[in-house]
Length: 503
Image 1: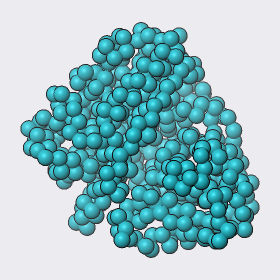
Image 2: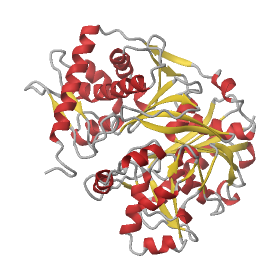
Image 3: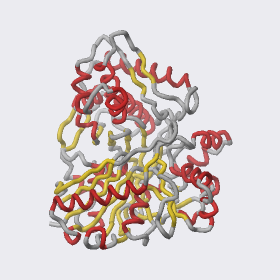
Image 4: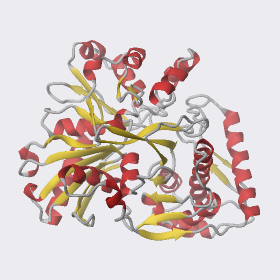
């Protein structure tokens, strides 16, 4: 039975998972790596840390499974999207730390571009808004702030890529500079209608075309790893950004299906089929996947803070020692209190898109304590998902409210308390699958599809299995009261708009 190896390179850790041909997990390994915060709102990773932990976890997973390179049919890569690496085209050495998707250093530049009236053009081509979240302004910052970088880039001496592209370059020994359509669609440089890099956008952000990778299908032969990495060469046959990979792992192949992933942030995607849907509610239009040259699109809502709100309780406040304590602690909270956390630690994502505001707590009383803070942190994720859910329903009028189900995955879905509250506030069923590693599974599926290990999408969808369905149980009056309180809290926060870095 051949294995397919998924590389899941995330924001706080790198993982490798070996899947069998029946999609069961044979072995996995995970390593965390340091985060760097050189200034307020800045987030960086050391590219060598990303590379070292990726290779170490691949080798560890292979050792656990007793697998050699010859036993692995293909590698699939999924990655933290929008994070940017620029490296020397010959040596492969990065010219600066990676600038992470959460980083807000280009907020002023984005504000200036919007003030010049450029956002409608950018949105029409990319499906995105002008925001520091996306890769393009990060590349521009590196070229303008690393000494000599722009001149080197214009001479063709530098390469740019998202993390998948950087890993592919390193895995193939510098032979392949390529990415897939899902990652390309998150850069502000890619025309999602034409399926190509856009000269007008490149000129706008000052990014030389020579830096850019070739854009391929999500399931394709990307190249082969150099033999010395894993004791033999392994073909690389699948790439997708993490949220698109999770959409595939959740088997959301039919238009109208929705998945939401709860990791560091929260990301909901609604499959809209072969037609890109323009959002009137500040959602993003993005490429869900590209197979056989055909693009499938999605509406996406991005929440910057989900699991990191629990990390804040643990590491920032010391309220808990382990994330698993949060649900039971929230269950002990005082039901008479209505405490709202709006976790805008790095600004607010969809559907508000304000990079300047910062987080706030509302409704505190003298009796507010750890239980109420845990309650507010978990509930904040549910409220933010509701905002995305409502925006998607407005943008996709074909949605049938009576049959719409949200498929969920990611670390926070282990909390039954949070998932039940999510179902209550959405007033819709929430389905948690048996295989929680849906992001890695999506990457493995893309690679296995190309390698002939896994079947075509609809047959693969038959393998999806339900672990638990959370059904709404909250009264309509309670739901409406709580949602109204959240709306007031968000309105109060947005009214502050203190500016990047505060006062």
